[in-house]
Length: 337
Image (cartoon, one colour):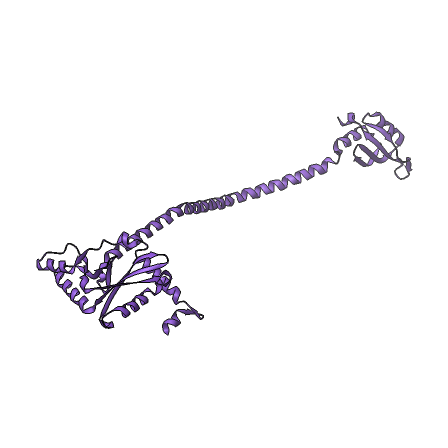
């Protein structure tokens, strides 16, 4: 009941998935399907029980450190069965039930072993050996005596027409030690190779990251050094803009100084000017003169101006005792030289 609860999730039976996972691991590591045992397990050595006893009587050392001792055919019952491939996850239970149904020995006195010898047409052909436990114990005791003075591990097996089948419960764990050591060494080598490959593939990434960091540091340092330069450049640009605006502003106004000197040079001391303005090429002067008409004539004859006119009539200012005038004239190119 506890097993069912452990293999159930939200009412879904996961026992089938669990069995298939276990079967996949067994086939990969211990089965002949993946080929790992063929690659990494040393070739097992077989010897018959009679040969083993004869070598022990002759005090001959065994030619190896691990053996599968073959039981005599006369002491082994051979049988077989066929299962659908889909039922392989239940093979142990099926073989155990087949053994119970076909063994001539009581259940507690029955030893057995099995091996898949053929996979075809969606079926599994399984060879099964059945041995009396007393027979297995006698054979194991004889093997232990033969190997007593030597560090040898062994298991009991029987040879059918199709395969050599190990007897369950009579296999020394040391038989798997070389295979597991080779497999561990291979896994370690594979892990080291994968780690080396990962390291080699990560070198360009690490180099790119370091280069990017160096460029980032260089950029920050350059920005820090150029901050003052950027500030000076900004101030220079602002000053240039102000100069440009000033030049544009003053370019729209005529220079008064040269024309003021020219007008003063031709103006008699009896004439007082109180206003002078220039707009584009038009000069306007206002002031007081003893005789405004004479002053107009003087300006006209100076060859500095053209079209000297009075936009309004001359008037007499009693307080200044002079004539008030306003004269306009066009600036000539010759006067500007």
